[in-house]
Length: 251
Image (cartoon, rainbow, N blue to C red; front, side, top):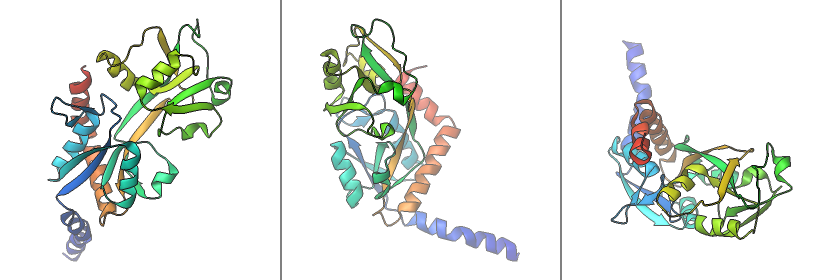
């Protein structure tokens, strides 16, 4: 009987912390959309794989997400100050870990190097970082390219993916670093043309994880992260995450 009482007592702090979480959680999404993970529906509301997963996680714990759309840098600034509670779609950076807690990966994407077939008649062979150094690369302003440790000729002046590919076609650089699933969805929606475009696998970080940032300013930050981590594990375990992906991508 004593052991049973002790076991129950050990769980009381966790239950108490969960009960003190506010019923609403503010979620900041970047205005630079990345279908199929983040897009807008016909009413201008956020939609997509990441949005559905976040909604499901909070729904299961009777929490209401308050979705906000901001420039990416503003999302990061507001999670740092505690003006918003969480920011999804974040890859890992040491500087962000100073002011926010990282959850387990919500989803992963595949990084590839797009190139114009007029520039390369045959697919170039690039297997490691050193073999990337002779070439020039394009990225998007504010995105995370820490994996290259500043060793590449990398132009990140493009404000969005459309501009990135226009600059690639114009010959501003040899390759554009991008997430394959996002570009394929933009092509399917006719938001981007891949005529005379091809790609090879990115050799340094071919698979990239995306997490949810939880502001350290939240009074129950650790509990909120634990709740989200439990939710991520649950929707992956019971097949809900797979159903959400099929909804947006098909079989």
